[in-house]
Length: 237
Image (cartoon, rainbow, N blue to C red; front, top):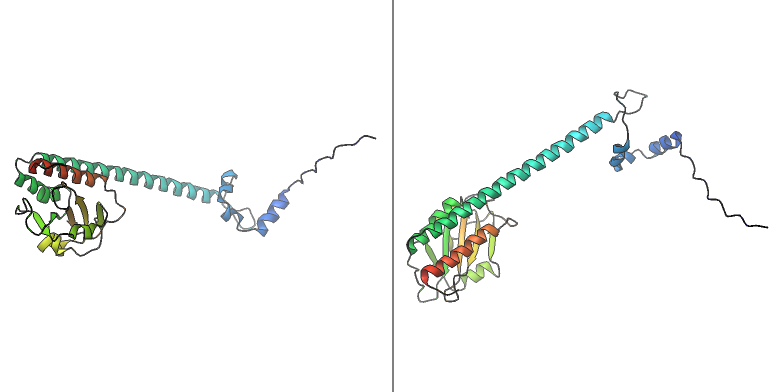
């Protein structure tokens, strides 16, 4: 007597009636599985009572929506790229302006006046901590002094801080504080021989600066300022 291998059970045949019954019992199936529509060939005519539903208009609307979303995404990418290029050009102009300074006063003017115009902000201020006695060049117009420890208190361990929807700090902006509604503060480490400092940019627009914005370009400006300061004041790094 020979053993015969068990035959695999035949897969039951799914009929059209089975599918229709399934869809009737699961009316949300297509809504929950919209990708199924990509495999269907919709009817070309509008549905009327008692006839199959017409998916063609739905698919057309879906394609239009997909196209509109793609166009919108492309437009946003282009606008972002243009904004980045514009910002980069502003940064380049700002750096060149600082490098073109013919004396220290002109250099300070390029920071506190020219940078504000080139970077499209309302006010730019360089704030340096006082050491209780004197600070080299602190009498130069455009530099504001604050008590020792202030910079660390404001910045904590951060090198850059962006804040929106704020009230300007008088210690930083003086009489222009009432104008400031958002700001970016950049730590400026000029030298081991100089007190801590920050470069502050203030804007009257409450959302000009906010957390999450890219800061690599403006941090580059801060690094250039540090090196220019060391050159003008003959300081070590």
